Length: 342
Ligand code: SF4
Image 1 (cartoon, rainbow, N blue to C red):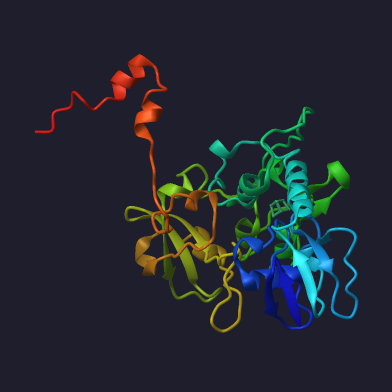
Image 2: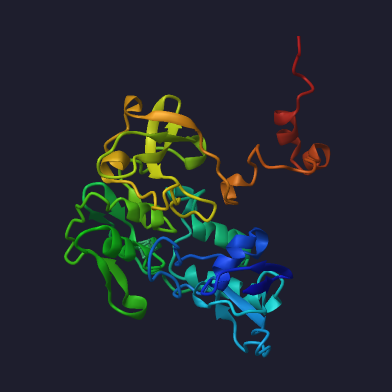
């Protein structure tokens, strides 16, 4: 089936969604997705971030779709034409959805462990409005320990449901879910019952914001101070292939390997590279791992803005004109004129 997104055409399998067709094209036309996660069955259709405009339904019926549609759960039709980043309606809708998601989400990026790899931070940076109209108080909750290694900070949760799909699909018995409706909805472990099965840590990797965090890593370091390396070990419970986040020779954090969509990578044999809690939480000793080499971070993100591997046309720093804006004493403080070079 042929589909055209922002003027770029691609042939895809019948049943492919518009979002996945856009991911095959790549670049700026890929709609953002906070709730859809290709490795989790049933995910998507909740956050409305991935809205697109269908300007031509198909070759058989070219009528445009009157409303914007969620690209993660709308299948392509042969000859369909879609506008993503080229549509003013879509850009305006994404701004509104971002504003809506931020109604209850605290703006605590400076102290949040997810900062630098947060999908909502990236969404706000790309599609957010500069100001908020929201004046009411935000929802607040006490922090909850989900088992001894995971902390739930419900204030930051955007109710994407991804972690409940992990609980459903990766763990033998589901012990947490969403209770309540509307603005009373919240993640609950049903009377704080610990999630103590060996794959539960994967909910940290799928959480798009900083609501579920690794207690063995919390507040240890900002993510951009660490160096990610691909590493593997013999493991009987999972694939044993991970990314270890190092500071010097010390492993600060272990996570699953993620692809350019910030989703856990598919391995060569077609299985998903979920990792067990032993690898994630209990294997911080460097001797337990074989380091393969630096992890290639492909995804565009806030911390990748100044990435030295990114190709820049030209870096222009107008130091002199900026200096003249400062106060006299500041100018003196940063002036290099009195520094001897010999
Ligand atoms: Fe989504 Fe995270 Fe909230 Fe779970 S805790 S619903 S993964 S935002």
